Image (cartoon, rainbow, N blue to C red; front, side, top):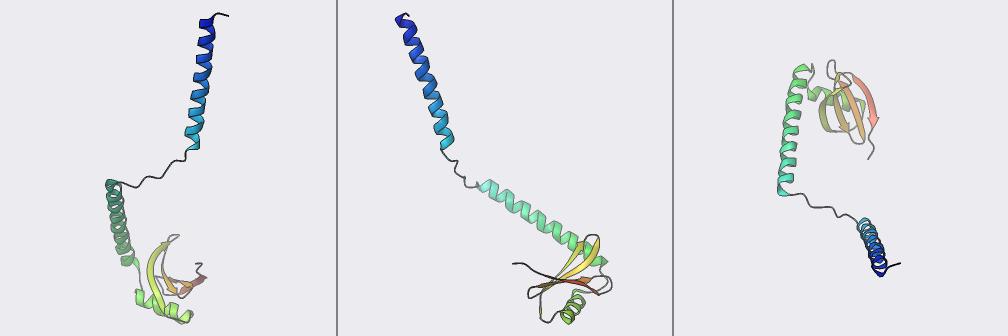
Length: 125
């Protein structure tokens, strides 16, 4: 075999091993999480503000449909579960309008149409 052919084969072999080694090293280096840019943070905050506005609009629509007040729902829930309500929230649950009343570690669902307690559920922390 000619010397020039040997040199070419050796250079090719070294090149292939070098490229393979670089590829292996690149896969071994873990990717670091980058910090969000100011634009990404601003976009996220704008999106959150839009979500808040949509929630407020939906809450206003639901409130117009409720036949009882949040205070009446709270009274019904507190009569069922001993304790003071932490929060009262009007929700559309599977097509039914209900108040979700949280008392201690219990969530009480109250029908927003007639004020009846539908069920009580334990909250998981």
